[in-house]
Amino acid sequence: MSNIDLKGKTALVTGASRGIGAATARRLAAAGATVVLTARSMAGIEDVAAQIRAAGGNADAIVCDVTDYAAVATAVQHCVDRHGSIDILVNNAGTIEPIARLADSDPELWGQVVDVNYKGVYHGLRSAIPVMEKQGGGVVVNISSGAAIAAMEGWSHYCSTKAAVLSLTGCAHKEYGEKGIRVVGLSPGTVVTDMQTAIRSSGINPVSKLDASAHISPEWAAEAVAWLCTEKGTPYDGADFSIKTEEGRRLVGLI
Image (cartoon, rainbow, N blue to C red; front, side, top):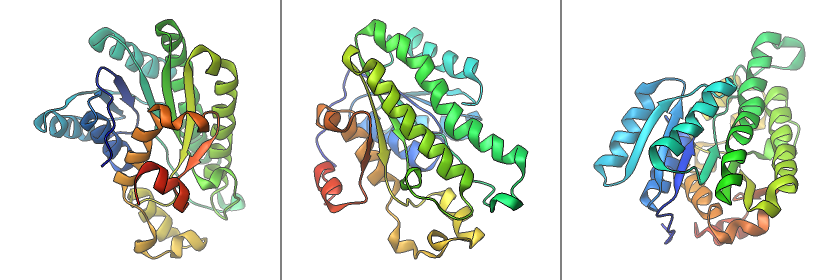
């Protein structure tokens, strides 16, 4: 674990009950940040927040469905009201289920993925940017994917929404970068999470057949998020930073 200092910062992490979200909440707290964890239900996030507090960190949890703009705005305001600011937003909430080829997909369920993966990130940006602008700055890390730039069979909803998020990252940087608000994406590669279980069960494309050893741990992705929250991540603002490469992993300190 590298020496990252985020003391005095307040971070909001969506989809923080498990996987990359939970690992990111723990890592940001270990770096000294006060962390607000969100998810659609309290059970998982309160458990993670309690673990962070037991380890000496500062964390609390609030229920938030990222598909509901008002709920996201409330979570952002919670950070300000309770902790005085929102300095870091990690737009992590995302889903890939159900995996299906286009002609087999359920239009309603396909649309629900759009609501979480794409509109959820927009809701986060729309809620946090005005507050960060008043504060004089902040950092937004959007969890992206190599799927943003590569078509994958059975993943039309996931690939297209991640591509849209990459575009949002660029747009937000162009509009607010000069105002001290950093917006950057993280493309971690395949990570050992529940999402990989769904991918493996589908058997549709080559990713579903990868050996478990090919996937990185959520903690590696979390380390990259924390690194991007520092000034070292600034050169990648407006784009996706990848830890799929040896160079990216070396920069973060993973190898």
